[in-house]
Amino acid sequence: MNEKTLAGFCIRCNDQGYLTDLAQWNKEVAVEIAKEEGIDMTNKHWEVIDYLQDQCRKEVAITIRKVGKSGIVNIKEFYQLFPKGPLKTASKIAGIPKPVSCI
Amino acid sequence: MSNAENKPVKKMMLILSKATLENVYACFILANGARMEGIESEIFFTFFGLEAIQKEKLKHLHVATVGNPAMHMPTLLGGLPGMEALATKMMKSEMEKLDIPPVDEFLEMLTASGSKLWGCKLAMDMFKVKESDLIDDIDGVLTVGDFYERAQGDGTHLLFI
Image (cartoon, rainbow over all chains, first blue to last red; front, side, top):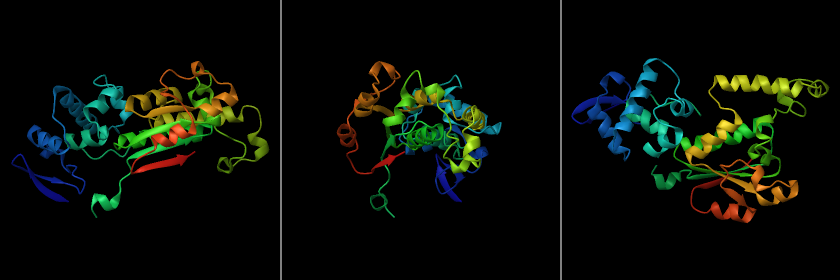
């Protein structure tokens, strides 16, 4: 467990930089994590983040296939928004655990 | 350790030579999994692997029930009519539960993720497969030499399935 300060907030995360408590997440923190990943957040990015957090709260296992069928983005757009591994990167920005899915 | 010493995988070049469902899925999951990690991936479909990108054939691929010790059934039983279809149906239903798509949708996913799909020229000539028999999403038809040329660069790995 690590602690770090992002956008003035002290947050806890694991060794790979994923937040360990979604309650500590806020948009300012998300923007900072996104910057570390080389991403400038747009409305579309936020829509995906909202969707992922929603799925996480419902305890639904997240896969690329499900994101592609979410009606928010298709798979191609998902890769364009988060080019370096969309599910991993988006989950990190969303403050949810790293997905364990292989799909 | 620094990244320079770690030498991360940058590109996976997969060669699919078989058309049994278990092999096709292994290949697709590896290619898709690479893209999910931000690693480039390409698939070279050769020999029987070509069936996985032929419009008329890709929906009818089967699990091998004969000559497959992991099926845990006598070879004679595995050879009975309908056994392959049954095993295939069971495997497909288990995979659907894990959100693993059918072959046609999986190919679309791979293309959308930026994976490149190539047909093998020699195998196509041998099996009399025309480019028009292949799915529209195919990136082209290559020789082995072309495929190796695409494998250039640090951190590229080749895998034969």
